[in-house]
Length: 126
Figure 1 (cartoon, helix red, strand yellow):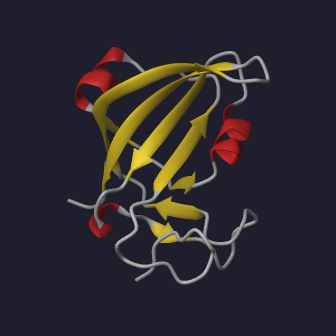
Figure 2 (cartoon, helix red, strand yellow):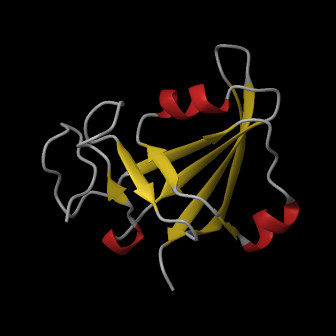
């Protein structure tokens, strides 16, 4: 079992990575912010914020800050086949439940883009 590490090597199980999911042309509906929702497809989450921002560049950008606090909330490492820096991307299975923590923010980036950031806690399997 591996988790994301700072050095791209074999990370420890005690690390709690912050991951990002960037989506373009999407707004977070009030129903999602209140109760959460599921991703119907595999969900790739890089640890690099700039990578997620690049995927979300649009007029209505949404970023999920994915806070995986236990190893049971972590996806599978894609370090061995990722086109991003080694060890910096996890994949979640279809049906992963995203539970909002109640923390949201609106951020203006140096590029002039503004986006909504919603912190979520992933729940894998049932």
